[in-house]
Image (cartoon, rainbow, N blue to C red; front, side, top):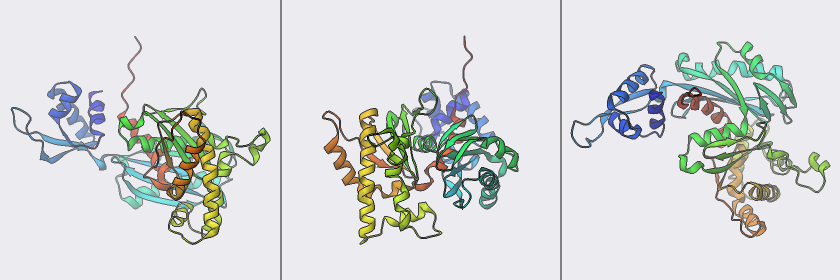
Length: 376
């Protein structure tokens, strides 16, 4: 347990001496020394050449930090257009990436899983990292996920697909495997990249073909009674229930309206990023105006329901938000009930890789988990 506590202190990415860690954890230097010795043997931390300045009596102590090359994690994000695959190191840096088009086969789970199963070895081979240091694979998917299965993913036309079992059989060599919702994955990436003070109450919106969300409170995702909270893309934005077929948040504010502006064969995240610099297109300007209206309407409802302290946008479509930020925030300000304020809205730094990086970050997070104490 003390070794994990030391890791948790070092996760802030600030090198510390053993004495610094001992003071912070209120334990003896000997305890920290033994824990660091264990972590060094596991290659999870490294001793740096530089030394900390002496604080009081005694000579300066060598600084210790997380070892970026000590552990690696693979994230595979599925959409109806492509699989985005990343390999990250212990410092969250992407060391290898692949994008594989599945636009012609996304509705065939067996074919997609075959592609998924081949990607971990490809990433390891191209990166030349030690395979023994790869801790596992996490898949993120746009839909309801439970017990290793995709229960419902409308954009993929998948129902009740046991992804983990099928992938475990197909993946060689075998690695620990799990699956999560793509918005929950994005939340994991944002949480790993933020300080605890930033995570008191955050609404994450993943903007892609569909729209997912994760509500972070005190750094933890609020998932609802059945683990299904956050499916805000299915929020009906019309006066009748049957308008769920035509007027949901994700239909009005997903990336479908921008596909005509992306060249054939260009990955959607890359194509959307190119639109940021496209000027002088009345058609694109019109699409952005319509998108701003749909996005503002959905966010308006969510602010009234959840009252988040901050909102963070991620996913491939979030790259376009700065082009409409003023319009969206004006619409929110004009239409919020008196007493509500427009919370700060920012764009996560991960771009279109957010869900894939977040899936990998979920695995990384397990190294910082304290063991559960037995019930008394």
